[in-house]
Image (cartoon, rainbow, N blue to C red):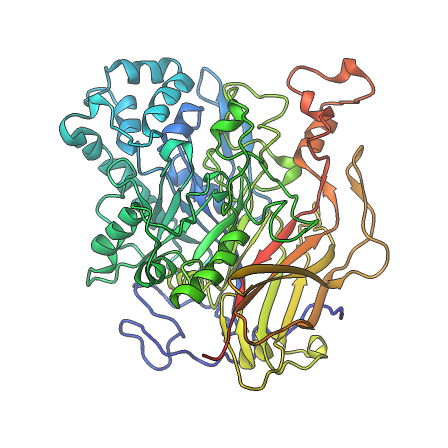
Length: 640
């Protein structure tokens, strides 16, 4: 194990340029395709730097957010992401907000991802004169928003979802009404995008395809590379399978000749009832190589954490992992929180399970359908991207919380959390550069903190590489970064992994938390089975950090940064494998504990436990957590 401070070579050694696919880019252009018209970024880092953002954001254009009192629209969400304050529900009779929120630090990028389904219905129910406005469902929605949302959501979450009757023949009225909101989403993204050389903020055009058959969450966030997008977003009601979504993205974007490009990001697999990472088609037949390659091409990232729980790994999966028990929901669908069931969480709902399955499919098909990288995001339904601080959590206005017309003692269900962030390693803060990072999977997710981490795999990294002032240059030159594929050699040598992490720098008023450890999670295929090992590869010196839940004060345990070169002691070059890094902070208070302390709860004094604060003394609700980051994997492929 080795410990090192911040490496200094992120900006002064040139990255070997990759072949340019640029539309009109000359030999001196960037090592990624230029597909849009914009000024070059003045701040350009050939060795790439991390950009922090949120690719999962809902506003009042989403039916569920509107039904819970959200008034922020896409332009408001982007202003919030750039650092401006936002008023949120509840609202007074004069329209002013009772709460105002703001980020402590602006984001680098964001995407409004309102639900494609119900875009039209939301507008129709709120706009007098449009078809459907006077329907009984819309009338209920305006008078009792939560009841109206429940009525429509139950209709659209069936195994075979159907449009409401007020949508008219072939749902034309609802589909036509969705055009205006879709145009608003696109124009808001364009206005927020900084095309000047300052490159202060990047917005992406996108939406959420909200697949929910039988309440199983198979949602995808669709992100377009540039301003060229589908004329209408694909909907689950009309196209109710992931394959149908992929076909629409191909025919309405990728097969065009105007530079349209797109990816889909699965999210909330933890409540997908095993349907997110299926390896059979609709007829029950095993997928073939063409489908595996198609999925790997279109879905290069998966959201590993967000407001509705962590999707990294299962507590009883493959082998014991004591650090797996982080923000787990523990039920098969979101509906099971409201109607408790004894049903267990089915197989293949977590990212690690899918990554392992991908190795098995690679052995069977010669192609890996689950070669994806990892990111986090929030799934905010307040139009508040990046609002992830545990000590300032105000809820996300989503899920079973029903009191969004007032300020509840606990701002959300204790099962939920503030969500995380997506981090992309790119040369600059532009759409093309960030999208290329998504495509090559040079990305990672955090549970909220702005931890910085790098991960490289190669065959010849020196064991003292952490003392080298040119860590990134060495990492790229002699290996591959997170998201990459490390081809086998004939030497039989074990690969070496260069891992470094730096704590969140924080702000003067809210400094970041020190780091406790770096771990490498290894998955491999052997004799047709998936295996797992979790290795501690670096730890902070001295005693571990601790936190006092009664005050949430932390001691000085932990490290500012951790770095090591690790060689796999059990490597066998005959077996395909993958490796990813998990970075753990020192312990801190969970958001529920901050809220309980603020409300003066003392579990030894029942009189202090007001209505709505019962979770403060529930032993199943964690008081302390360890925030973290997860890198995209590096895959090892044996010599064929």
